[in-house]
Length: 537
Image (tube, rainbow, N blue to C red; front, side, top):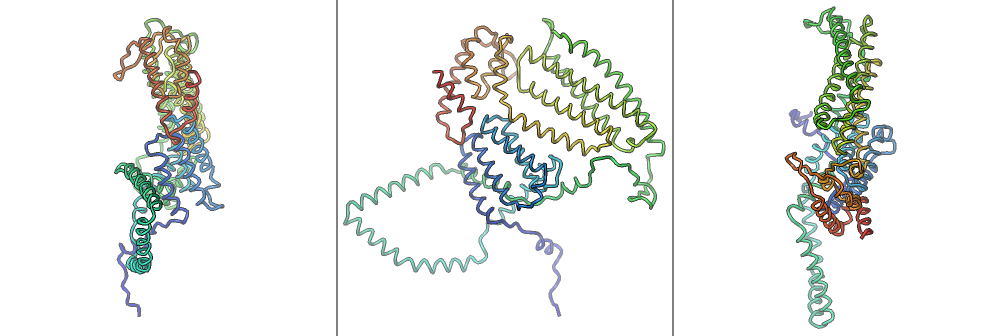
């Protein structure tokens, strides 16, 4: 007869909850990774150290994957792995902020695909990795506890300690006798003790509360990267979504459908036709309006545009660009709204609606080209800058998004499909921006003779790898009108003598800083700049 009582449901849930178990490789890699993180990043900038730490994480994770794991068959897994390694190399090469952002984001996305290899959305992979990291930290903390048989282990330690006590005591007595009797041995012992004392003093001098917290942060980050807690929420949500829109024949008051709905319906039989008429009239009207705007832009901007002397080029670009980009996004939203459901299967008017939407999308492509030309003229007359490069990156994503909207119109693709494709495009653009030596290209372009007004303060605030170009072009400073933008947004005149002095100060600071840097903070671009500056002396 079984006399055991059933456990409460809460206890059943607690006993059935899986505990975190670490493999032998993870047990070794966790402390090693924390030590490597501390050695590479403590008081160092992100440079060569980020490449080495990324390689450590990638190799450690790949070694835990079986040979026939589903991750190896995932194209997203391989793509993000390539992006992670490429962006890490770019951090060691340039050390730019774009490369650092791409490396961290790409590594997190890749870990999401390691966690759930069947994921497709880049955003879901990132959320999966973050969710896993939030769960693994308390689980790792729960492992740091004393073993249950600590009492027996302490007794065994005391037993062996007593056995070794007599030999150690005898060793200490003979050591004291030899120190008294042999002066050479005494000097040797003193030298060894002094060396150990200096090492301990330097060790405790470097150890601080901040350093300990930094080491613990490295341990947490390493644990979040190497130990993955399965997160199924996002893959479950994604599995319900399809690439194409299907005609909805459920949610009607009939037991013959898959999901009947007997609640009162506000969508009546003729409402689909009404929605079609609204879409038809809206697309017709906005097409005519956009046609007028495009004709004006083509005649005004596309051919032979030259701003007059009193023309406000900044307002022309900033306000016009922002408004036009917002217009393109609203246009994409309109198409996504009308082609979201059964209007894709309204055979009576679907061909006309498709062609109107196609013309609407193509006109927005023309509008995007006009935005690009506005930005081009602004660069031509005022020089390159980060935001102006970012506008072209955003326009590339916009044009790609418009192409996917055409796929939605003609192939009945779902919004999920569009989000998936555009997320991949955004990821590819992020990695592509990480591969660019943008500061060098900006400096070379802005120093060209055609640009008479030069924001030299902007060039002086650039990273150190730009300094050889500035040093090689010091002769152009008296020939230009030099300006500098203050933190309040106002423009002030910069005298050539002051600009030269600031440049020489930057050069001295860079040489001293590069000479004092440790190898984890090295980048190839800074090393090359240092060699060039020393070679010109």
